[in-house]
Image 1 (cartoon, rainbow, N blue to C red):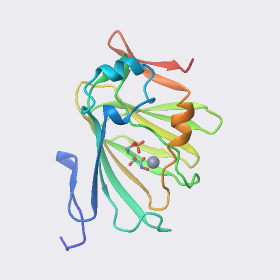
Image 2: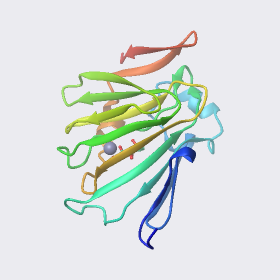
Image 3: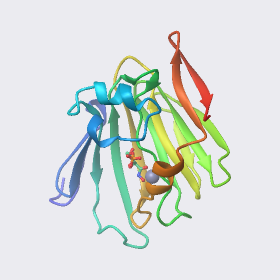
Image 4: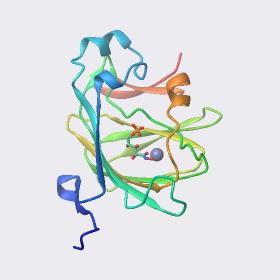
Length: 185
Ligand code: PAN
Ligand code: ZN
């Protein structure tokens, strides 16, 4: 391995090496993301919901560059809603992305600009193409950690505001032990 390459430990679902950013998202960071805000406030604020290791070999914004990440979502719920990522459109909205399942099971929630939502089941080895102009979020519907890989353009950026303001048009809830889609009220 040269000085500049990152090591992927797929079996451990982590990335190691230089130019790797590690980011933890806690219960305290997710205000307004889950439906049941009271239930979220009752959970320990420092509880980790998900972590991302991102290999960023070029500066954010570099045209033609690529980033590579691994996200690990803890099992858990806020009220009856599964732990999930915040979710975003890309700031450069015409940028797509690949996700693929590494460990655990979950659901990728995709939503276009007309708020049409669709869903893809994630499991080890599943491959998911996220088209341009499509918001994306992953919920962990299993009892163990869900981890997935991602590869996206270095100039894609993140638009979290739209999702913070209007959410996705459906939520993934645990109904009697089974994941169920609930359209947004
Ligand atoms: C991923 C996500 C990662 C965390 O790397 O950023 O899974 O999700 P949120 O960014 O929605 O919190 C990606 O989609 N990059 O573009
Ligand atoms: Zn993305």
